[in-house]
Length: 205
Ligand SMILES: Nc1nc2c(c(=O)[nH]1)N[C@H]1C(S)=C(S)[C@@H](COP(=O)(O)O)O[C@H]1N2
Ligand SMILES: [Mo]
Image 1: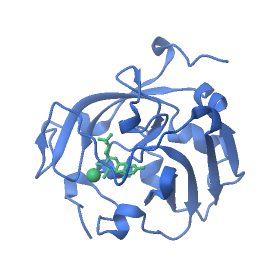
Image 2: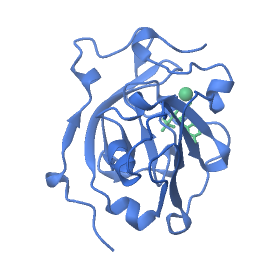
Image 3: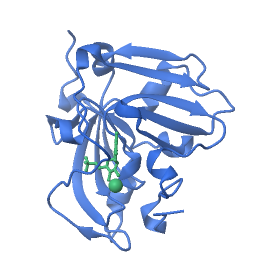
C-alpha cells in the first residue's frame, strides 16, 4: 500500500475568499463548532468496496478503487465553510487529491462538458458549473485538519468547493458525471440555487 505524500511535500492552496478583509458573507454568522447537516442517515462506506467513477463527457471515462484514489497526489487547502443555513466556519484545512488531478486521470473534459453532477451514496446528487468544480482550491477531501473525515462529515471522501455554499461539497462521493446541460441535484430540486455563490447570496432559486 502506498502512503499519501507527507504534508511537508504537498502544495498548500490558500482559498481566495480567505484573503477578503471581511471573511463572513452577507447574512451569515461565525460558528466555532462544525455542525453536521445532510438529508437522511449517515451511510457506512467500506473503503475496500468503494469505487470512484468519472463518466459522461470525459475524454477517457475512468474509475478506480480506494488504494489508487488515495495514492494520487494530494493538496492542502485552507478555506472557509459557508452553509446556506447561515453558519460560517473559518480556517479549515482539507487534504486530498484536487478536482484537477481527477480530471487529468480522465484525460480532461470533452469540449461539450459545461456542468458536473456529483454522485454520492444513497442517491444524493449535486450539480455545479464545470468552471467552479475546477477551481484551484477544489478537492476531494480525505482529511480535515490532518485527521480522516468522521463518518458524519463524509468518510471516506467528500468534495470541497470552498467558494460555493457548502451543500455543493457533497459527502460520501462515489463519482462525477460531466454533462452539457445543467441538471438539478437533490437540494437544487428542492429549491436551492443552481450555483450557490455565498457572496451574492444565491441561496434559493
Ligand atoms: N451526500 C450528501 N452530501 C451532502 C449533503 C447531503 O444531504 N448528502 N448535504 C449538504 C449540505 S446541505 C451541507 S450544509 C453540507 C454539510 O456538511 P457537514 O455535515 O460536514 O457540515 O453537506 C452537504 N453534502
Ligand atoms: Mo446545507
